[in-house]
Structures are given as C-alpha cells and as structure tokens.
Amino acid sequence: MFWMKSAGMSGGGSEGAILFRRRSNSGTVLALTDSSNAHPGRIFCQPTNGGAAFYSTARVDDNQWHHVAFVYDQAAGRTDRIYIDGAESGSATHSSAWSWPPSDSLLFGRSNTTYWYKYNGLLDEVRVCISALTPAQLAQIHQGAGEAVEPADVGPDLSATLPGNPGVFLRLPFTVTHPADVQSLRFAARCGGGFVAFLNGNQVAAANVVPPPVWDGTATATALPTRSQVFQISSSNLAAGPNMLALHALKRTAADPGFLSLITLDATSHDATGHYLQAPTPAAANSAALENLGPIVTTVRYNGTLELPPRPPGGTAPSFFNPTASDQYFGTVAQDRITTALPVYHVFVPGTYQFNNSHVIDQNNVGGRGSFFFDGELYDNVFLRIKGDTTRTMNKRSHRVDFNPVHQFRYAPGRKLLRELALNAEYVDPSYSRQMMSMGLHRATGTGAPDHFPVRCQINGMFWQLAFHTETADAELLENIGLDPNGALYSSVGQMSGAAGEKQTRVTESYADMSAFVIATNAKGLSF
Image (cartoon, rainbow, N blue to C red; front, side, top):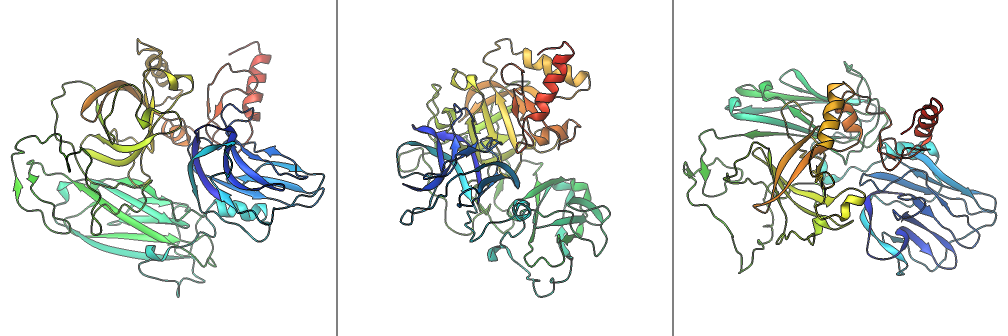
C-alpha cells in the first residue's frame, strides 16, 4: 500500500505509468492509466500467468493525495482487490493461480522496460504487509491509524503517562509587547486525533471533537499526524504582555499507543513607518534600519549568472522541512510602478521566462516550482502547472497554483484561505465576459459560484497576462459557497448524457448519482 499524488504522466510510452511492478513471466503491475485510456486516471492491475486484469472504479489523477492498497489472494478461484482512500474500488476473480517471480525486485514509480510512461507524481509511506489487511483496517489506515511518530517531532514526551488516558491538556505561555502591530495570526496543527485550541480563553480552532469537549472525551475520528490543519486567527485575541495558548489534544481511543500533537502559532507584523533592514537579524532584535529604501536593485548576478547561491546550511528560517510542501525562503517584493485597478499577482520562476510556452510551468504534465506574491505576502516554493482539457495546448494557457499546506493563499478579508488557485486564461473567449456573467448570475440567484474576477499577472517582473482568479472545484469550494462539502461535485466535460462530466469530490464512488440525475431529467423532456 502507498500514498500517491499525481496529475498524470510524462514522456513517451503506452497504457500508463508504473506505480508498482514485480513481474516477468509471473507477478503483476499496478499502473496509473493514461488520459487517453478507455478507463482514464484509474489504477490498472495486470497479473500474468493466470491472474485476471482489472481497473479501479475511482480516478486518482486529480493531483490530490490518495491512499492505494492492493490486497491479493493468488490461489485459483480467489479475488484480488484494489482499495482507494479506504474503500474498495475494483476487483477481479482469477480462474487460475498466479505467483510472484522469485528473482525480480520490487519497483515503485518506475519500470525496467520502455513500454510504460514515466510516472509524474509523488509516492509516500510505501508499506508491504506479511498478511492481507481487512477492509476495516485499511479504512483506519486511510484515516491515520498506525501512523508513525517521528522522534524529531517530539518535544515533551508524555508516552509514560498517556496510556489509558484519552488526551492531554497543554498550556503554552508567551509574551507580546505590541499586539497592535500584529496584522495576522496563523495557527497550524498536526494531530493524530482531535484538538481544541484556546487563545487567552477564547476558542480559536478545533477539529474532530464534539463541542463542547468534556475533560475525558475522545476524538470523533483519527487524522494523519503528517498533515497540517491551518486556521487564520484574529489578532484581536492577543493581549499586551503575557498571553496563554491552551490546547486540549484528544486521542481517538484511550488505548492508542502512538499519538502526536504538534502546533505552531505564527504572527505577522508590519512596520507602519516603512523601515528597511540592512542586514538579517535572525533570533535577535531588528537593528540598523533605514527609512529610505535607496536605489532599486535589479539583475543581481552571482558568479556572472542570474542563478542565486545555494541555501546556507543550518540556522535558517523558515524551517523548510519538506522540499515539496513548505516555504524555503521568507521575502518581499519592492513596490513597483504598475498603475491598475486590478489586483496584481506576482509570479517568479527560475531561469528566463519566454512567452513561447517553453518554460516548465507551460509544459503538459510537467510544471515547476516558483514564488507567488500578493498583498504584501510572499508564498515561496509553490507549484505551478497548466490546467484545462483542450485549452492546455493553446497559445495562452491557464495555470493552477498549489500552495503549501501550512501557508495557504490569503486573497481577501473574510474569505477562507485557498490551497489551490486557478488562473484561467479565457483564451477561447476574447470578450472575457462569458464566465464572468455566468458565475455572477449564479451568485445573484443564490445558487452559488466560485469567486471569479480578473487579475493582472506579472512574471519575473514583466507583464505576463490578464487572467481570472477562480476557486478550484473541490470540497472547499462547496463549503465556501454554503453547500455540503461532503456532496458530489461534477465539472461539466463534453455533453451531459449518461454519466458524463468529471467527478471532483467523493471520487472513490461511482458515477451512479449523475447517471440517475441525467436519466430523470431526460424523462421529463429536459436535455443538456
């Protein structure tokens, strides 16, 4: 079993990209199928020497994390099954027995032949079990049960007192000298169960608890301790002088032997007088500040090139704990001379950006990392890639920005932070009006629609494009527009007949709900 995150594949090949392979004259492969396959974006299982091939019913090519498990019984007349996100998603019963090739190695994310595509994505937490797990056990693992606690994450070790106790109370005092200077607070938690957080007696965050939690209560569900949950907190909760952050961390069961509760509270402040620092002062008071910025520094070169030196080792901030899920640098952008009524999104990517779709962020199924800046805040080490179906090959292409889990995008007061942002090019509509009118009509009639508005985009200091900020179609969008985040959300792709469209939520389920909806409306003489 393993966790995977992929938007597709790259390079040349056939059928799909290998996720797992141990096969020659016997054995099997697990592959992610190509978008042109009759079963696109599914897990394909193809054993040899007696086994029966089959596909998963759920797609996993949406660039979201999915838990995949392959449970097999090699005897004749037995069944092999695939589980995605804790639920069964395809099976096949084979008439003959099949076996593993004894001399072949286990391959993950690659093949030892050129027949298959190259896998373009991430694999994590790969496990091989000595016996078949039950559906209940797989569902628990998907929800976070059995996750290892890394020693580096542990501060106070309460393992000697927690067994038999459903949770723990923590009080973390800190001091704020000038709370009026704090513009925002960001609370992030990695917890294996549930928690409630209080700042100076006011509840500011909670997850997997039944409110109000009782002192000996338990969490309502398990959670992955490797994933952060982020909350934006009003700085009005702070007080001048001593402050207290209190946490009630709850285990799913009192007998859970491994439990992690790791929290951070980050504050952002702004110097209203506009001072500029001449030198970095990590872990010390700011000094040697200037009121005047001085000359604008441009085209900084290092050893004759535009490439900056490597990150210095040790003692740097931010911590950069994950090269694909955390900020590498803090920073800002000097004020430019752009005059526009539109919001201005600044994008910075490595190398020289040319407007001929040759950069990695414009390449199909590739993408690359860069920085994103808006409203005084730098989001470093974000992932940018093109999006769309037929529009991804046009001269002007739409892009998606994936922000890091612990530093999500703050684009408007009172709006929830975004993990993902679509910058739609609207190349097929030169009037830039069709989507604006459609989504505006939905909002005016109360049916709900994603935020969709024009923005000016700069790239590496140059004008890039007029694009449209659009919330991506997922469970967060449903919640933001006041709908049930557990509902089924479809994106319209092609003609809506049968069970057409792409399912964006509850992707482990079938398309039966859409099929029933289309059949029922057609029976009433309506059509799409």
